[in-house]
Length: 226
Image (cartoon, rainbow, N blue to C red; front, side, top):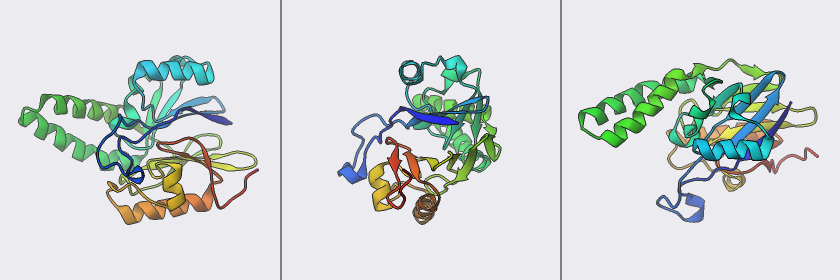
């Protein structure tokens, strides 16, 4: 089993940098995992054309080589390039699927009734993505297990990778950046900030390395994996 970061994400506005409004286009960190016969891409947040180029640059892979796509949460920043992988299986945790589905459908109906065409189109795409996603099993491949990290969204779920000498946790927005990890700070727009902070503490207890939702690979400050 091996993994690598394909694209480093960013927050549209980072509160820890003093940003109170969007300063850039946000997109999730995208990670590639190869385990057994599965080639898994996590959170394809870049537009399809950019993501296709990054996949070639970082792993010498074509989109058709991806067997599975896993979403840590369902939002535009994690799904922007997902249509590139129409031959893959799309997965999300059952808890995220259930928590997001009804609110998305309600927002879509309200936007359509209000004549908000652009918003309705964007929400319709998210509904379509969610409908295509199946509820992920507890393990996606040998050494690749789901790890619930609720708080930022009700069902946010990371992936725990069991390497021979250390454990890696792909956290999604549960840990946004290395700075958020160092401060044990959740994103302020979390639906449940106390629960999000608990998830950070649980992550720190179990993992040696982290792939944050909007940053590059980083080492846990409490452990020495090497």
